[in-house]
Length: 165
Ligand SMILES: [Zn+2]
Image: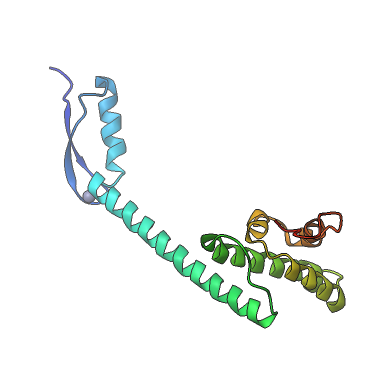
């Protein structure tokens, strides 16, 4: 008697599905059928995956909208200039700027030794860097590195007529 190729599996989602395991070696079928039992059937697995992807996308969109609102409020409060760059990069760059500058404030002023005068100077430098691409490039930067990054961006040795392009 040959080892059977069709196995009826009770999936963890509660569905019973008959699987054709003929593609697997005879001595692996029982193990594979057992492995399948611990899993949802494929329609359930796909449905769960699609739901979580849609959920993640919604969650990300909501998170982004919240960050954007925070960035806009911050720009207004601190009179931050509008960034220059391609339209589609502006919102993202503005979120990057907000995040990096607030991270720097936390590290340098709240947790560090900077006073408000030091910070006001840094903030002035922040206002001079309006190239969206620059802020996008620094999106993974550490807040503590902002002064050095700003110093490089506003380096007086660079051509002065259009230093940020
Ligand atoms: Zn199922």
